[in-house]
Structure formats: structure tokens, C-alpha cells
Amino acid sequence: MKNLGQILRLAQQAQERMAELQQKLESTEVGGTAGGGMVSATVNGHGQVKRIKIDPSLVDPKEVEILEDLVAAAVNDAVSKAKAMQAEETMKLTGGMNLPPGLKLPF
Image (cartoon, rainbow, N blue to C red):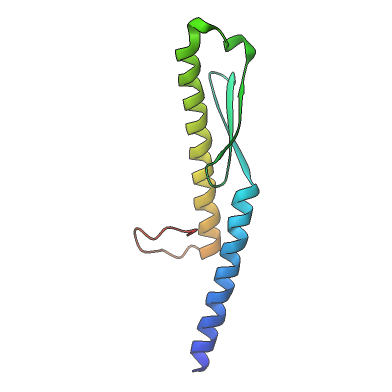
């Protein structure tokens, strides 16, 4: 039973570290850009959009479709970077342990 106690203690520590990671991801921001920096998007570590910035020179009624495409590209760039950061932080948390396919962390 000594090993069971140790396993439970390790599981509790892992759960605490996972909660810390969740808080870190919530407060960490990642930026993405499109159109040579004319459109930028900022997302948190969970991929939630926090800010969109658009260069005023892009706001032309005739260019709305281009603007929409640039905003989508900037958001996708930021979300991609946030996912990469999340994967890196999760890898640090798990100590490089290979997790079974389909098991997503953080939960």
C-alpha cells in the first residue's frame, strides 16, 4: 500500500500542476499577423480571441472582402501559435511522457 499512497500523491501533484498550467494558458497571450502586419490578432493560450487590430488604411468599403480574409488569416495565425505553445507547455508538464493517442491535455 506504500506505493499506492505514493501514486496518489503524484497524481495530486500532477493535478495541481495541470491547474497551474490552465491558469497560465488563460493569462498568456499570443499574437498573429496578416497583410504585412496590417491586421493583427491576439489570443490567449486557450485560443480565445482577445484583440483584433486593423490598420485604418484598410478600412475601405470596396476592400471589405480583403479585410475579412486578412482578419481570418491573422486569427488563424494566432490560434496556431497558441496551440503550439499549449502543446509545448503540456510536454513540459508531462516530462516528455508519450500519452496515448486521443488523450488531450489540458482537460
